Length: 169
Image (cartoon, rainbow, N blue to C red):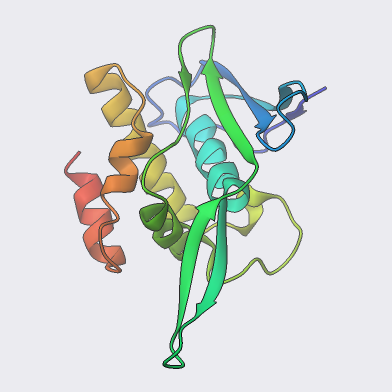
């Protein structure tokens, strides 16, 4: 049984009464069934939970040591993928450039996870909400999932530039 999200829609949520569910699939064990993870109400809380789960669990960061002593952090795909289904409408799924996803993960969670709390509780709430609002705007304006578009906004290590690009979507 999926658990209920602790997030509730704000007054500015464009679809506050819309119900949603997040499902997960283990990509390592392709025979394992898709599991229901989380349910809730409101487009912004749903997108915030989806982005938090994607960044916290799907995007994996690792240190790479170079011969010259320089260390870099690289992002790769973990073994869990998530889908957000709104009231029987098409499902949103985040995919795209994992270098960009790694930058966003770092901005949302810092260099490492600090506790084993839920993904949403660990996140920078302000930036996560900004991402969800941009995702919702693209979804409503263009009728499509916006995960790839959002990731493409994180083209460099400039968090302020990223949030300005999101505002322009």
